[in-house]
Image (tube, rainbow, N blue to C red):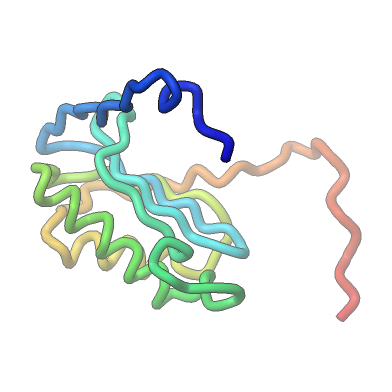
Amino acid sequence: MAKKANQKAGKTQKKRKVTVEANGEAHVTASFNNIIISLTNKKGDVVAWSSAGKMGFRGSKKNTPYAAQLAAEDASKVAHEAGLRKVKVYVKGPGNGRESAIRSIHNNGIEVTEIIDVTPLPHNGCRPPKRRRV
């Protein structure tokens, strides 16, 4: 039905080539609902990524440590084949699978040199949402 503009003109998008050095960064974003792992080079270009949703987990199973482990394994296998060997891990968010994601990145042959927590904390900024009543 509705085609994208570049497909209509007969052009196909080319996959972007990312230069991969041995050193890079791993960004683990662990929210309450999902976990997203992005392995990047030093410039910040994504080499490999994965998430619990991409691995087939749905609903409340997405924020489990097991889902984080499988997602991190998937991303680190692709990045290891591309040539990534050492990473600094930047962890963001309050989710469950933070430690298991870091552990499975390390177990798949990528050395973790540093772990940095970059979770944003308000300096008394916005008013937080009201307390949950369960």
